[in-house]
Image (cartoon, rainbow over all chains, first blue to last red; front, side):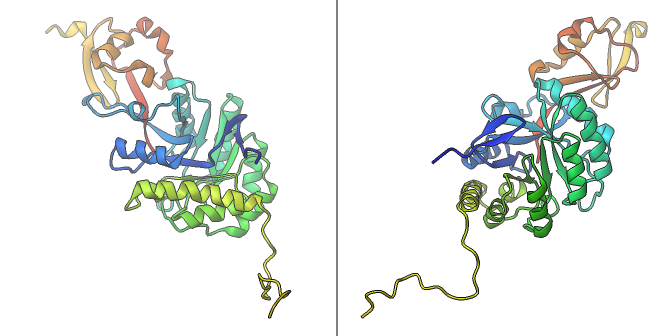
Length: 257
Length: 72
């Protein structure tokens, strides 16, 4: 079978599961879950170095950025300026150009502020960044993001960390239809079947953090998500049968005694 | 301690008193910062990590040193 490659900003990936590195008990657990998930891209956040306690473990000591692509994000940013500042710093740490933009507008539900998001996408694209954009599921705003040079459109399926599954199937289907760059479900996945569903709808990848990190058995869930994404993708590519309200026997009548 | 020879700077939100003619390079050495794993801002402007020894700090300078942590 021909290899099914995911291409983001001209970089090729075999895995269609992107995982976050937050909310784990410790770095060891995080690193092991990532390994099991088979993810080739992980999101990371930019924060102040603890200058008082240098014994704190560093993410880079556990997850080798030469082996797994770091996708710096702007988690916690509520304005375009904060997001731009954060990503410029991220680029400075080690030349990261592919970034995840996330400008929040709503502290309670963590919904994105799409006006600030669009503004930031325009600036970052001009500065040479390849911007993967966390966004809402509004087809008009998503089209605008795409037109302003976004490298991936990453709509939420439900609020970040909610685990509610895909609450906006119609909009995601419309987005699938109109989006030419990779379409990635960024938030709301709760269990493996949600990931399967996203992939069966034709999404190019899913991004999961909480559903793995906060599962009772994170390693087992990481594995479940790995196979869910593979399974959903294969199912999508296989050309499903048309749903039918009448039964159709699986066994021929020929030779019936 | 002669106060005239000292300046106060803010690093990651914390006050530090250092000598006059203290450079950013002196600062990262003092803090034992793994330079290849961080980015540095001086008064909200990113500083080229290759030129740290040329940047002399002034009183009330604000320095941010950031790195990657786990996040979704």
